[in-house]
Length: 132
Figure 1 (cartoon, one colour):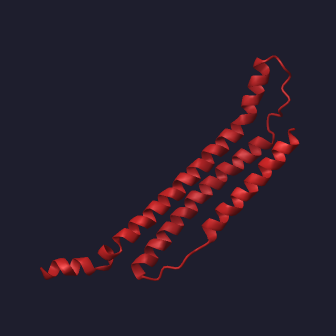
Figure 2 (tube, one colour):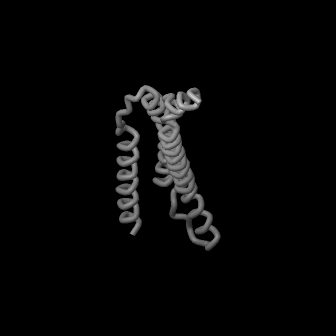
Figure 3 (cartoon, one colour):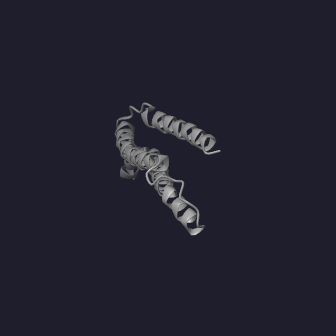
């Protein structure tokens, strides 16, 4: 009976829920990075889509083959990949801190995501105003 109570008091068992929460957070970051990469792919291919639609409608293609959407799409794919790598680094760092009971918050990934969403929003507003 004493081995059962000793198992419950071991750091790995006590922190099981915290580790699972850390893993859920990591998976949420991975989903976010995949979403950003998918959005970047769609944005990059949007210029080709517009060109094909204008060709189908018999109008002259006014969209340059490598316009803003291509550069912006490639940037988003790269940002998503970078966020995936940074989220793994954060996951391992937090996992170690949980085991050592020295957890401290880190704002790097949160700040990167917030600033990138702000930059994307500003760019899209400028792009949409310019296209009017």
